[in-house]
Image (tube, rainbow, N blue to C red; front, top):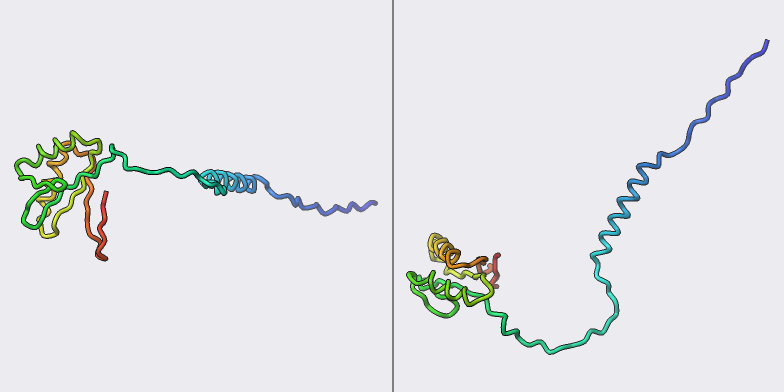
Length: 142
């Protein structure tokens, strides 16, 4: 009579490599993308040039309304009835169709919205609101 002893099975001690490869691949992509946006910091001596004001660059068009409801386009006072036509003429001569609005804080909001509407009709493509920061500095809101 023979006795059969069974050998204990060896445990398979291998790691599944698929998740590890996925993580390494994602890290590789992250570092490749982030390194492409870093500008090289090479020790270069760059040439200098005299920078003069380009005559094609114009000062932005500023529409201002003071506390007495007087309307100004840049420095020129304009009557409300001629605002749209005057602004359209000014924008026609300008490459930049953006306008910066400055209005006294006591003026009603409806006046501001009305002027913005007239500015759009006159051909303005971008309207910016200039306001004063509580610390006293001037800001611009696009």
